[in-house]
Length: 171
Image (cartoon, rainbow, N blue to C red; front, side):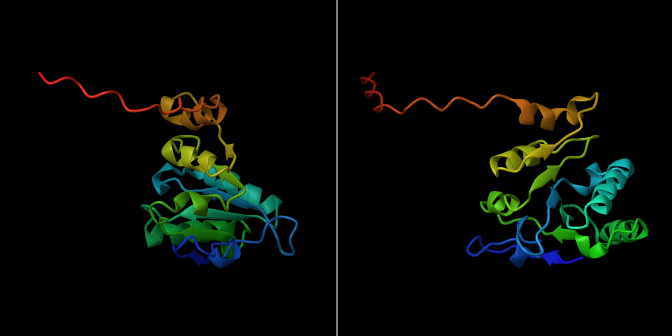
């Protein structure tokens, strides 16, 4: 699998991060992403993501290395290979630089959430970056957070700021 090193936003592109060009461009494909911590990923979810990759030869899966050991990364790549998915289509990324993470995340086409324990803040980040979510809510609160974010009505704009209030009189 290729490595997507963090870097500055200037000149950021899918190609620079080892991701395929936009759909419609030569060699373009779909970038499916999940930036959840590895502990949220279960075997049935991983198998379904591999099935998606098997059905779309131009897609890649972009994952975070956050809390992912090198041994776990190798197990995921071996599992992908055993399922007939080239390990080159699984792209791991180190955590993004603070303050620039939304620019990086906006390069994904679709955010795949983990159904057992949803992304929470990471799902909110994906939505703020303009990336649609795929979420399968279950029975627990932790498995319904992303669906709540995805289907919540937009917040109204904040009220305009007026002049500062007058100072309080001396006591």
